[in-house]
Image 1 (tube, each protein chain N blue to C red):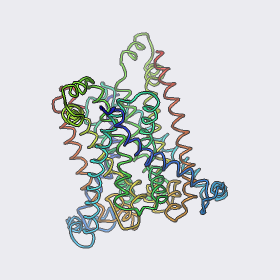
Image 2: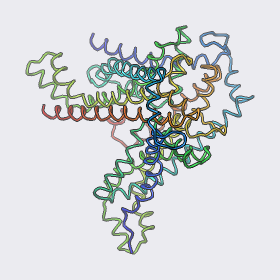
Image 3: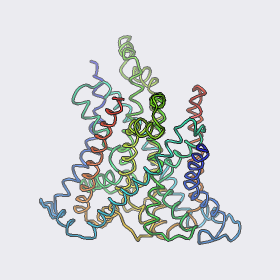
Image 4: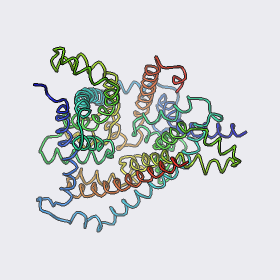
Length: 259
Length: 267
């Protein structure tokens, strides 16, 4: 008898259930349990009644937003120039921007510390934001560069031929068409920034803490249920952001299709 | 003028992006404790990496990083390739479900993957260490293997496998002689990707490495930097890591550029 080849997926299916689905369910389960395993909402009540954790949470979102906006502000022009054949002919510069994505995050983080040490600048909030932008800028440039690079140049040319000024061409044609890249860039910067840990303490020498660290500290100190509740809160934020950007991405795609 | 401004902007960003690495590399050749002080050229920091108390822990961390990376890459390549063949032949809801589940580890932030696996190992009551780290790495690497093998399956002529069976090959022979040769490029790139992801990982390893003193390069650097910021011994280490990554990328790029038309080669 021939074994159906679709059954070859069964081992991996079991593996996924054991090591992907079950662990996530366990986070949800632990979040609603106390130490003895009884159902409780205490972990979430505790979160809202612990000003330090609540503050860290809000602060992390702020830092992630600031980082994302700065990466977009610096990254978009860079991606645009890199993709523009008249302004940049060298493929080396593109590779130089992508290369840091392959370097370990901790190494990149410590590189920021080195720069600030070298310039005798204080390692505080400024260093943190610089470090975050430094870490994630390539992740913004790359997707935007990709969409701009693949974009059919004749749209912009047509607009120009029809009398649009360079500014109009950009706002009416280039920018809308590059929105899918922008949204995936935002996703690729915001998500890791909000969920990062270790980066903030290393840059600020333990002066500033982000939400990821709060989760890690609780897990490390044996507060598994509270840690799981915090992880679940982060998971919700991430799910919301990714659905939101996903929808915007689709909308941008549709709009692009209309032109 | 416009071109000049554009180039100036690009190079300014690149200088900022690379300045820290250059600074670290330069100051790895001096002994000064404080970065920025130059106390003369010296190779002592490099020497320290190879000898004394630093070395044994560091060498063990490097060995762990590489061996975990290789094991994770082997297991996820086998698991992922077989799974890809299976998923490719699936239909309907089951296929949708497994594809969705396959996406989860790629979308999940590292910290969530780490915490969730930590809780799993705690709930099951496993002592965490080398094996749990390998398992965790297989969990987040395999989806990438599946995604690398899938396009190769799509390019394959589906009848060749059936033909092999009709001509009397056992399913095992048909797999070895027909399917694997055709999906091998996808398996190789999946293997390389899995290995890279594994040696680069920090967060998942930190959560699943337990407290038996197991360290990979990432967690070693983390522990060291937590104690004293950017300690002098990290400078030569980071310089070497950067050079190795650079070398690897050049090799991979040259390899993939081979046999492609000139135009693509530039990118």
